[in-house]
Image (cartoon, rainbow, N blue to C red; front, side, top):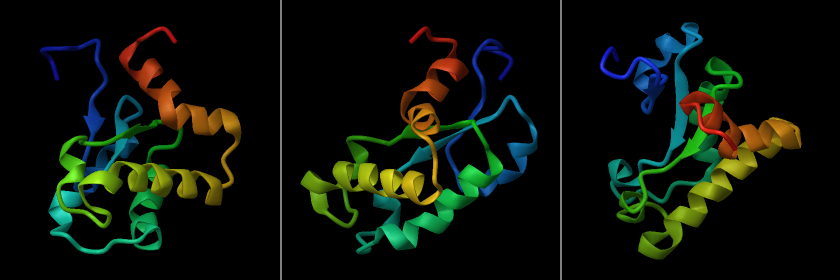
Length: 119
């Protein structure tokens, strides 16, 4: 982290959720379908994991994926996984009752803020 002190640390795995107490840490909601070993995952099955992210990193969650790797394995095969991941995140945002401003935060504004990029 010291090699790039102006960039915020980002968390890409739920196994390190304890760092959420540090306000400089951001979380990326990232699809890891190849790790699921071709399971037929559903939005309902993935939602509890994203709930952990949103609960522990309020206003510090940014959308992400490991595209094109997310197209390997996963519930909808090589052509459908990207859209599936977008649908999962959209559903979670809706079910959490997030405002349009909060949704924009997840899709792009948090990334701009975290990385110091002007929108």
